[in-house]
Image (cartoon, rainbow, N blue to C red; front, side):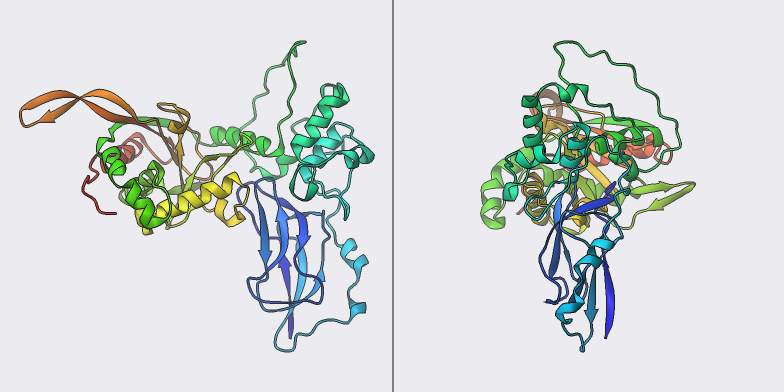
Length: 438
């Protein structure tokens, strides 16, 4: 008979903490390996933490509503054939309270009266932070009608209340960079940060505070441009064969695979094949060392309804056929929009693809998703007159053309490698077999 500590797992890039939403098991319950024990929430995803082994849940070490750091012990499980449920007196509620995360864990200094969650009302870290910054009292927060799951107060609910409350949002104390909650979860950057210009707010202007996820994205993008010298190479590809083939097979593909065939899986397949040809773009930089990634895990940037971005990852994309990639793409995209991705599905990427064409853009200059060293943006597919070679000579024809923009870290990816890689992706797309079977 032995006991094991269940710790809050790592939940993706730049995520250092999570909130406890609910315990799915209670103390004394028997649990099995991989059975969900507790539901947690970050600013990116809600997910469940499973039991690592069969046994008895003898102690829940944190309470619902607590904010817990990655690696913190959240439960004790008794394992082995002799595991037995503890006597009722063994479950000590005060003990759980004693090991809860200390209030000093967040980086941000309190700006107003602290608000807390209760058994009747759960408030996310984002809502709590906004409430502090806007000097919202506990009584005020408790009076707000929530539109979220189980009546939870969302950011939109709180901002709507603030807008009707008066001008407190404008007069709220400014949050310095040192106070920002995201500072603890963003990797340190040696390069000095340039101070932004002083902004004058006009009488007709509106101040909209960034939510925590947007702050994380902003810091991550600034960090990336400071860490990596960016270079971007461009290629225009003729996608006529791809467009003709997709139009021909998409109905049959959907009937066979039970999922739609978009262009994204086709792009990901071409990228995975090109990475096998040029593995130097599938790497990371660690000081003076280059880490050559053994797996090809392609992240696909996805826009959320909130306007923020998230990058779910297709693991081992080079080992999947086109139907397998399509199923992964559609499943991840659907669950990203519904905020149902698991932490594992947004980490471990080794290369990123972003589709700026979905917004009608013909090209873009994407910023590298650290700690990767390259990212590819694909633009809108447009019909254009183009010169084609025929046995009878050159001719002008209407073709389906698309720009590919490849940004890469010039510390380890030079122009030859970066340029050849994006050219190879274009070649795979241009040489698409119009008679390819599903």
